[in-house]
Image 1 (cartoon, protein in one colour):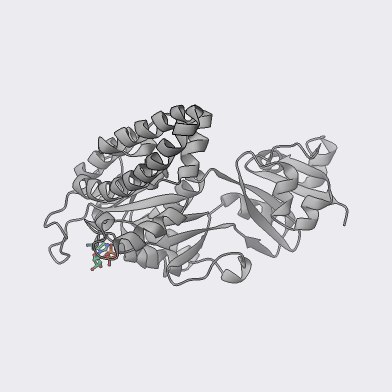
Image 2 (cartoon, protein in one colour):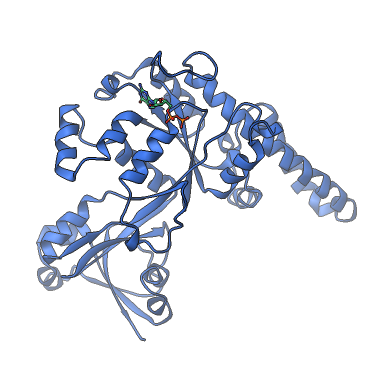
Length: 364
Ligand code: GDP
């Protein structure tokens, strides 16, 4: 569940990535995460945990986390091997979603690789590299399928479909702009094309343009328009400010944001947007020792969700005592919730919902 940060040189990727690693989650809580220099692990902000901590009088909060991977070095010509082109493209292949940082800030001290600030041109430059790389993959696939189709005519429809994908790319459009049936989508996912991955565009703006998102900077407005044509999201941030915020304590951070006229940092917005982009939801566990959020894919059933805590729970699953977070907060205590019959006993086919507070019963 990793996201890769990409963008042209000098757009603010490292600055943003440093903010991520500085804000970084306590790694002791996340032993499953890879600790590599270009990987940053951040907690997913979740107000509900603070409420639960009050209700349970818990000692601590353990938020869930996601990983960002800094994929620096993508330049024009990468797909033809410029720079360390292909190496970077292969890193993108390993991530599930892409955070594409584009420069919207003017600063005469920071050189732009193409001489001027133009986020749409930058997006096109990077996307073209990804498109070229995908075309190469499809061409190889077409050759293979053509050979196989000589003996097996049933492969003709697959061949036609792959050609349709390639036509889209040759039109300079990303695969994610296309609409697919479920079967087609499954097939496309197997191809692991770079331009089929979901994207969030992060517009890196000047500090003084942060406060009023409604009065978008015209460059941001252009990026928004383009992103909507791709069903992609946009998060407005100022990398430099994020780097400053990430050094602050929680209460100082709130004050600093308020001074800027903001209620949430760009990084927090990005983390939340990334989380939902990946199709992830959180369920919660609570007790006097800790309250904690756990990540599952949308659609996960109760035993699989329990397996995130311990494989024994999945193996020996009996039931999940479940209450919706809002129901619990409305009545105030777990015992009141039980009296009112708000705590449900869910079985192995129950599909876990975001914000479920769950106690698993299982055989060891
Ligand atoms: P990268 O090459 O995309 O990783 O870009 P960096 O993060 O190294 O940033 C390149 C330069 O732009 C550095 O000198 C940063 O200090 C500067 N920079 C990054 N973000 C901002 C920003 O939001 N505003 C301004 N004015 N400068 C920034």
